[in-house]
Length: 472
Image (cartoon, rainbow, N blue to C red):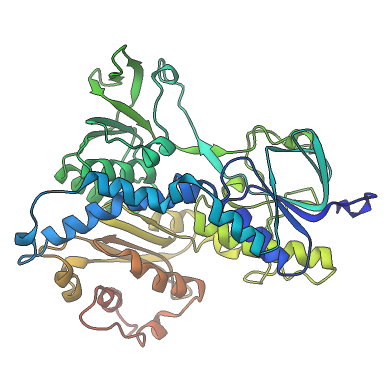
């Protein structure tokens, strides 16, 4: 490590004070080492102000209203639509009005020093912030990822929205074009259609194409029902914004979409371009490869945690990595053993095949582990079973005409679940039981004794096991 230097300002410096960086710093500080955290924007990071929290706040009111309208006896009580100013005000409250006072107060309470400014690595264990250098035994990079702007003629000059503008806007555009059929694109199309925008969504391929195929199909159908014009198999080839602010987007099929705003949600790249990583032999703008303790390959003092390492671009997974990394960094600095075997306290083993995530469209898409296709690509001998959620008594209580589907992917050689997908209203809360089953490698024979309460949506677990069948 960098401990051979004459003077250390800290044991650990964390670059990036989002949820991931905060957790690295917190877990390391609890083990008694001196920690500073650097932030150039708001303490709390992307998730708190421009991603997870404000986007879900934008979505929730529409979800709740549609859920009421799916229940006879309740739908008759609904008069009018959403109160858009109230929804936006609620969103703003979840983003703490884009102020980080509470987050800074938490850092102070945790005895973590905050350094404001843009940090760049200038050598082993050394960073520069606005002309002043700081040294540490370890540096953890938690700078996350940033949106990718496609190389489309006219797009940059048209001042497109990224997810930041979409989640923080004080206005709802009458017409919105969403480019991208992934998580951000489908969620924000859902949100803005609920708020009253006339939304067009264009995607090069199927929606949510990294999920089980039925997930994107059900989401596309649902988007159509709330008025979204879903166009699959085409992309913009030119974008122009005129003097009045109207955007005209020519698509590859020759059609033109006119909108007040265009939102680009086509992917993200690591935020490493202006980090100084070239000074230690790494390539700016690329993901930072790490081992399971989040130690950067070939460097014994540098860690990369969360989106920046490219393993799982999810806040909760980054926080999981951060807990392991904080503990591992402190152990190494304190001269304590590092438990790096799979599922040990200093590793993020779940990144490889047990990552849970939810797409908060309506219906929700909740998945953990591998899809059937991914499992087969890994050479596993698997069998998949599906069940219609609308056949489950508990689901019928949630909505008249409930539509949804569940799927388990089973490793036949070990008789354990390696993947689970649920699509439907209110399925997000089903996911943790599946995550426990996969992480714990619970045998199917034991799962028969995990009895779901009746009548709940969780009864789908029994129905899936019955569909799979007990061994004869």
